[in-house]
Length: 233
Image (cartoon, rainbow, N blue to C red):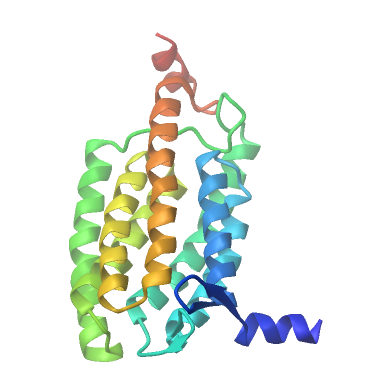
């Protein structure tokens, strides 16, 4: 057990090109990918699985022990893991409550839907305010390798995770934008193996969008009779 724990904390996994990935980095991203797949299927387990990945990845980004090297911490990436953890608890609670109340008509925990006009305005406002706050935090308090891009990675991740908890289809589109900026940032920072993993993850995000888009047209909220009648009609 101690050997396994030691490997998890300090171990590395070789990758092509004489490089290496930290064990926590690989395992944390694996949990994140598993969470995305479970979220695509709208299973409650997506949240606790993701929570484990959040904890592992926070230790990676906060210490700078990324891709087998010691470097400056990426506080925007680390900070979003803290928010992910909080949102995972919220999403876990919300999806469990909705599931117990009847869930979606196809057996999923929640029925996907597009956000209303009012909800989209709220996302826009939260995005602007969140970005400004994240930029100030990263430049004036924590310091960051790239505050302009990391502020968006942090803010966009917050919006996307909240959108997932609410069951909004838009959250996948926000994730795509976060991944585009995230991969670019990691490449510029020289974290090529991690950028590759994020790019691989982005493929599942695109697939997830189309899965939820299709479900939003056929799946209804079993707890909302009015919506059920509207979709049936």
